[in-house]
Length: 206
Image (cartoon, rainbow, N blue to C red; front, side, top):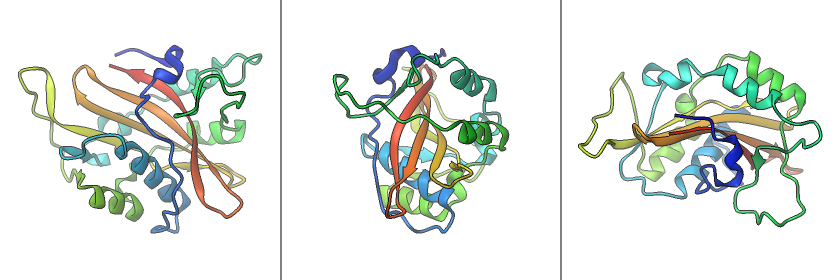
């Protein structure tokens, strides 16, 4: 497992940034996380996908804050968008991907992480997609080829910026011991008050 920020747009390139009027929760963090899950699931076969809860999600319960802190701190002030990218956007575009504000980055690092699996909106997205939700500490069964019996998703409840205009969540998937990735998903609120996924930052790949 190794950090993959230098890979830029190749990082989990199959993930699609999606805007959606998901409104099942009053909690903005849950709404944003539901959009992150919807975007993730739009790109793959969900027959054997499973959303993990705090009880059996070691990466959420022990989220490596130092890795995320380094991802923020290592950004070159002369290249403020280094590492962040916008899925589905041609690299030749002049548009610069949004990055989290300092206030949001600080709040994300300071706030305890929590699984989004308890969110009503997230559970609704999972249910509609046929994605299971773990209810106990269950380790994946590994096939002879090294892949797991299903793909596991770990998703944190998005942290909202102090001004309420941005949100940030951590997402990871694992379908084998050497088949997984983790990234940060940034959201912004539009004029109508809806959340939209705007950019991503890859943190690790295996």
